[in-house]
Structure formats: C-alpha cells, structure tokens
Image (cartoon, rainbow, N blue to C red; front, side, top):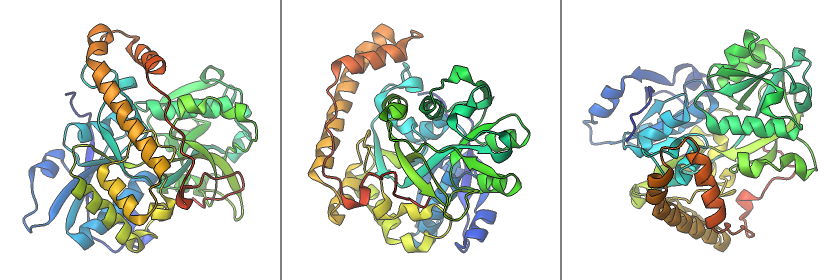
Length: 407
C-alpha cells in the first residue's frame, strides 16, 4: 500500500463549545506516532478521523462534533489533517484512521479513478456514514472588477495542488461562463494557501466553503463577492455530471462577506464522513446515533454545524453506497426509501463489477500513462446506468433556485 503523505494529527481538547472559544482553541498538536501509539487508559473508546487542515470550515465543523463525542460519550476522537485528498483518504484505506471526511476523493477511491487508478490502489470499498449538506463556491475581491464567471477570462485562477476533485469543480465553474481552464492564468497553490495568495495578489479568485474562519477573516479585510450561478439554462451545467457528480446547484445565504438578505447560487454537496465497508455496522450505527442524539450540544459551535442535523443530511446525489450501519439508522428514523435502497443496491453491484474487472485491467493497462482514461472509458461501455431516485424523503428534497440553505 502506498505510504501516507505528510499530514498533521490533531488531538481534540476539552473545552466549552461556545463558537468563539471553540475556534480559538480547538486543538493541540500531536505527532502521528503519539496519536497512533497510545491507547486510552480510562476504558474509553478511541477513534481517529482524518480531515482537512486547521482553519478550514470542514475542520471546524468536524472538530466540534468530535469534541462533543469525546466529552459526552467517552469516545476519544482525534483528528488527523492533511491538505491533500490522498493525504486524507490514505489513512482510512490503510487502517490508520477509522473514519475520514475528505473531498471527492471518497468517490474517486470507490470508482478507482485518477490517483486511485494505479497498481497500488484500484477501487476501494468506501462507504458514506454521515453526509451533512454544504455550500461551496468561487469568491473574488469586490475591487477586482470581477462580477460574473465570464469576467474570469485572463485572470489568476487556482490550480490546487493534490486536489484533483476540486480542480474539476473549478473547471465546472468556468464552464458555466463558457470558459475553460486555458482561458485563465492557472496558479499552483494549496487549498489552504488560497486566502493568503489572494491577499498578496497572486490569485484573483479562490474556491472555499462559504463559511469558515479563514474566509471570514479575509472578508473582514477585503470586501468579497461570491460568483453567482443563477441560471435556468441547463447547458451551463452540462459538464457537472462529468466534473462534479456529487454536486448540485443550490442557493445559499449567510456566507462570509454577504450582506443581510443577500444570496447566491453555487455548488451544494456533502463532504461526508466515510468508512470502509469492513468497519463494524454496530460501531457505525453507534457513531451516527451519537452524532444525531448530541446535535443540540454542538449545533451552534460553528456557522455550519447546524448542517449535521438529520433533516440537512444529503442522501442524493448518491454516487457511493452508505455503510450498513448508517442505512440501519436511516431506516430506524424513517428516511430511507425504496428508491434510495434500489440506488444503494445498484452501487453495491457496481462495486462488485469494478473489483472483478480491476485485476485484468491493472495487468493490461495499470502502468500506462493513459490508464485513468482507459478505465473511465471501460466503465462507460460496460457498466449499467444507475437508477434514478424518485421518492426522496422530505429531508433531502432537491433545492430550487428560490430555496435558501442559509449556509
């Protein structure tokens, strides 16, 4: 198995879950060796979750949840962080982490695409565990003169290092305005480095969660604008199925730098907690039950932790099956429909076909530079279409252009 890229592990400290106190003092740094090498001595359970870097909205949300489970249920949760998708997924796959909250890499790991289309990896048995709704977009400084996606032509645009999935979303944004990556000046930068790059003039646009301490700090220094994707023209979104299969357009308000009553349409998708299928169903069901039952304890810790509520969970677009333990929980709560079950079973069938085909494909094409495209083409030609879900529960009704998610 490939080694884990450099990552930083974070131990969640005990503190009151006021928003200000939480953001100022969530974690203390520990080395990976210390994190994995010591077991709790008080009989509590220990769990390691991998996620994004400190300061991102994704980290802050997950830290609030982890903090609560540590304090309330004697489940000692520790966070490992990495600025790359592979750095977040590799610990899950090789057993260093129990759960992971990564980007689209969970989807590419399931499919065996991109970095996972290599002899060392291939399709992985990844499962969704808890999928809170999120809103993500491209922002610019108001003094940049950029008001629409079309205005990004010739501007400095992020090419995120080690983040293939987000780069595809960035391309989908450009496609909305009739642009491609070649119409911009691509700047290599890490996800975490975007804010500083914008401050110093190296970037004219960046991609972020619409809330988060780093982007809020940017907005406090420079008025910002979230580029709006409001359109009734489906052609503007035609590339999303290929470039951003986990996303859908969604209207949000309350984002960093937004005035009272202001809203915009951007990408709405989940960065779910994930596990391997081999993780105990009882354990996963216990974790999601704890996340649900203790929601009131952490819902105000950050501006986005309210999205961990059951009625904000995104069950669609389902491109990776849910863990059996999560399915059991959803059935118990009455939000798992026959349509969701049919899609879930179709994904399990897809996984079986992928794993059956992979050894032969790896032998024939695994070391070729064009292997990812060959693999993609094989899937297009040989795998059946996934069934649509026509009986969504009220908790996951697809948003319209007039619905606000108040992210």
